[in-house]
Structure formats: structure tokens, C-alpha cells
Image (cartoon, rainbow, N blue to C red; front, side, top):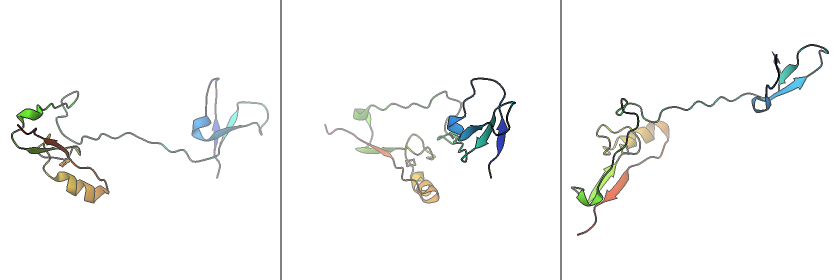
Length: 110
Ligand code: FES
């Protein structure tokens, strides 16, 4: 069922909202007829709780100074040991159908 929206003023664009102008009523303000559903996409935070008081979470690593030959860094933002991966991505992937995994840093051979 189409709905009607009254628009008062100039410069209003409804192209992206699936609305078309309708003059069926004659004189008066332009009526807009909805021709399709409007999909509203809201951005959500990726980081649920890690270091939220910081403006930006940034970590740097000197690869040659890694303590182990291979170190896994979290990319799912669910690790309890962030920035290191603790395997929490497995639970996240099962719950959401996502496919995230860690960044593996290899210490160069000396
Ligand atoms: Fe986040 Fe492993 S816990 S990638």
C-alpha cells in the first residue's frame, strides 16, 4: 500500500528514498508517493569493549623482537587478551556465521 508524504519547501530530493512526486490532487503542495520500501542501514561499532576510552586503538609490533617464532594477533575484537588472539574468534564465527581469524606474525629467522 502506497503512503503519501507532504513536502513543503524547495530543494528536497527524494530520489534515494523511493519517492515519486504526484500532482493528482491539483493545486497545493507536492504530494510524494512511496514507490518502494526504504532500507535504513546503520553502522555499528566493530569493537564491543576493548580500550573504549582511547580515541583510536593502535598497536605496533617490532617483528624482530617477537618472543615466539609465530604470534597470533586478534582481528575480531573479541579476544580477552587483545591485541593477542585467544581463540575467541571461533565462538564469534559459530555464533554469527562470520569467518574472521587472526593476523599471524612470524619472527624472521636469524
Ligand atoms: Fe580475535 Fe582470534 S580472538 S582473531
